[in-house]
Amino acid sequence: MTLTVCVGASGSGKTTFLNDVHKSHKCTYIRQYHNLRPYIKVSAIPAFDPIQLPYWDIYVNEKKDKSILVGGTIAGQFMAGLSGGQRKLLLFELIFQRTASQDNLLIVLDEPFAGVTDDFVPFIVGRLNEMRKKHNILLVTNDHVETLKTMADNTVIVSAIDRTKVKINEKEGVDRDTALLAMSIGDEYTQNSNNQDLKFFLDVELSKNGGVFGVAGFAVFSFGLFLLTFWNSNGGSEPLVLIAAGIVSFFTANPYFLQLTDWRIYQNEEAEALLHSSKMMNKMLKFGLTMTILVVICSLQYGVINACLTVDTLAGSNFYFGILFDSLSLLITIALLGLFTNMSFEAVQIFGGMPFLMMIFFSTTFSPGAGINGLKNLRYLFARFYLWCMVPGYGELMEGCPENNNMLYLILASLTVPILFVCYKGAKAVYNKAKGAQAMTSRRESMKTYEFAELQLELFGQKA
Figure 1 (cartoon, rainbow, N blue to C red):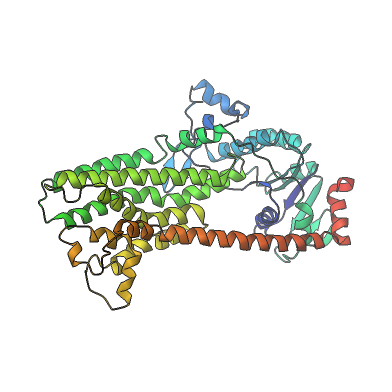
Figure 2 (cartoon, rainbow, N blue to C red):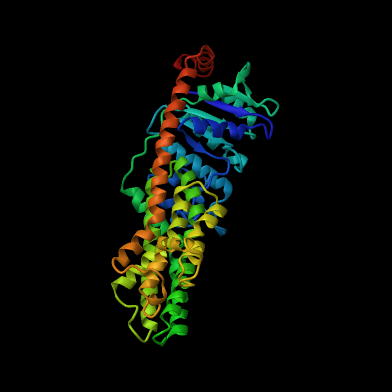
């Protein structure tokens, strides 16, 4: 196995080189500024022994070893915990322990010494020497360059002057794409999924810093005020009470939904660092937890509406499920885009908020019978339209309410976006699979060239 060091001036593209290796080959990758959810307890990380960390005895002596958090910032909230350098060492040790039971992996490290004081350098060097016995390691560094050059089997020099070429050892003018292909050698890490991952998810997400308790507190506060200010609402005010409760429900759930984008980004980087076994499994668990929170909030909404009204005109299972699926139709887009796409926070806010905005414009619930002919037929796409068809004294004003199966249409309308999203993701998966097969064919052709064989011999010797 080999240790390859990538060096070059600032801005020459060292990190870009590692990113391209990561894209072209499935590898274990620690970024220069790698993110972990800051509210994770270090002691809760499954199959990880923090005692091996060179600074852990401090927390043992202070009796904080069971409570210390990873620390950092997520969704604008700072949480005290490990320092930046300590988190770097945590990630490094996590990789070391996870990969110890496997062989022939490709491990990519961007600036492993960044933010780490000199007294911990021997620890990192020792771990690197251990890992290189079983794995291929590719790393970038601006610190302790001479130390790593002495250790390294190969040195790659990138330049900002000509980004199409690199220097490998003494070989000048090596084609960058060929170098990327030659270095992308090693098996993929095999995760062992078990009940520990589920327990870890629940322990972290249901902790006091995981966001659930914040939403619960805000819900109690908001609906408590609603009860105080809407108590003894008389018959005939049902539409106004329903609108007000819906607004309260939306703003109660919205903060938790909006932080899903940051959560997804951190989750992806945790998977790269082998913190847990499956990005998709964790995203599905988070989606399930988010939907559970929505159901609880909608149940509170239904309960306070009927507690405040002096009549029972909005009671019954039809209204409960109508309120639930109406709220689902307004918020589920934020959850889907936040968890299952690569959209930025701003894009998720804009496109995730579109169902709410379009509901105001096209559902006709705020202006029954109004709108341009043809355009107002779009009301049938909105769950809110069918919900208001059920409201006593207001449904008669709504134009074109179904005589039968109103609840069925309401549910189908609320699921329009999820169905379209699943279809899009399925089509994209098929396209990516075909594109990946084409890229693999191209890679195999490139691997048949003399230049590629010569470069692999230079990098890995007879092992290539």
